[in-house]
Length: 90
Image (cartoon, rainbow, N blue to C red; front, top):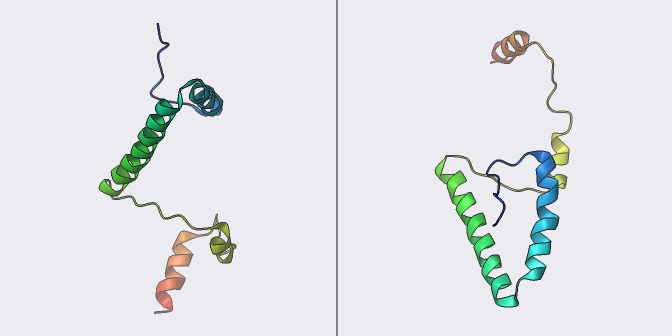
């Protein structure tokens, strides 16, 4: 009997998934590995489509492209004063 696979995965469980998946992949014959690869690509495409359908779009950028944003956002400021300063300058 195959053990049940959880649908919700916590962080601790997630660290076990990759090695287990690789072990299972190594045990499969090559035609089944190709089938699994195609299925994984389908799941990735489906996930991207679901994100677009929900109005969320992910755009990947390199860390170098984000370096110029360092220090632009300050946490713990006074929102009211910041808003007044923004609109007083208009």
